[in-house]
Length: 494
Ligand code: GLU
Image (cartoon, rainbow, N blue to C red; front, top):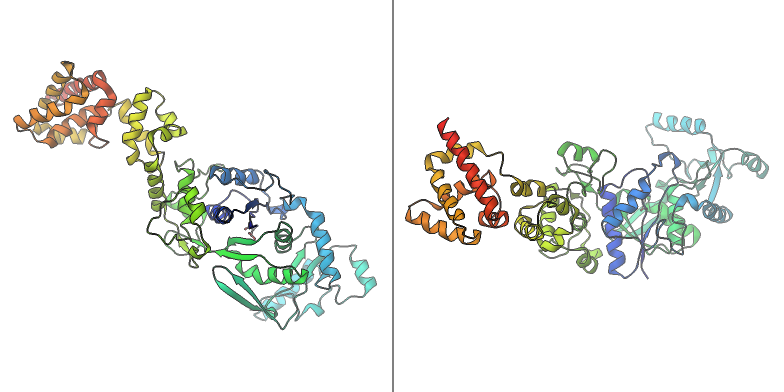
């Protein structure tokens, strides 16, 4: 059975890049009828941000991707928070020490910074490894007694990388990645605070949680040879690896950051975090979020780009994952959201909070009809307010439009409409009666419609006018026409 994990660090809100990684993991799991696991990588106590773990879980739930196993969902291979797995790491580091694959290093921070500065002076990047580990204070250079004595103080445990070999790892997206072990440092596996480093905890947990494919961002690709060395050191079979391409800024230059969102006015978080509104609050449907994000680095091979979550669960394939960076495009995200809104029935739309709020004052029949006629005008749920406004009031009138209409005698049209509605004619018949009349009077359809539109909704844009009139009903339409007549009369006198 395939098992994948999304392994965020709770250092703040989930960025859409992180959410994209979660989506790929989730889809991979569903496609293979496997398990989607949430693992919280909270070994860096200094970077822990209160509330971020909940935020991550809520973001996943909002998208409809409830983990099969995780800190909030339980599971048999937990605990799913690394901070609760300390004893496991201690047990596994002992195995590496016993095998001679890891060693204690007692160098002080000062000693290490001195060595770093010296290397920099010589124009080199400092690396603690096979070529210089003999010059440092570690369990490879000290005798038994010295080691025991030193272990009473602070120390770290490092991976012993043997030189002279080539380490090759296969990435499902990029193919084989090879590095000479001479290039690799002896990575710290256990820190002086007794916590494991990301590299060590990650490998131990992926093994113990029976992860079959590691799907994560491209930024982790350079760590892959070290991870492979750890699998080798334990004599474990490594999982498959898939590194997802970077999400690029809208201009394609560099990695997308929160600053880009602040600058261009788009969210970078799925849900509200402190003062930052998320996609949800901006009026995006969760299914649009998932659909848009999966397109950042994956191609279905089909022309169509519009997919529901369940369609994606069947369609997703590793072969569609691209290598090159994917440019973030907010307008496209809005377009995808628009497509998802269009697909919804009025009944479905009316279950959404934004619709409920905006249409609170209307009868069920009106709500249904309003939802029907405005949905193709919505890009985000935020647009509802503006679209619904015209059903509440036609004011303020668009005066520029009225000024332009005045020479074309809009009153003539409005008075006719008034008399038809006054005679009690049903709004449904109004259109035909008016069009016939206008034809006989040689009044253009344009003038007819513009005059009525200004009177009924105050401006020249909006959904089909006769649909609006039908929703408003005879008496409200009549009242609006009468008010517009008075307004235009006053305007003409002034
Ligand atoms: N904790 C790492 C992160 O926050 C996870 C990397 C991985 O998936 O291995 O990105």
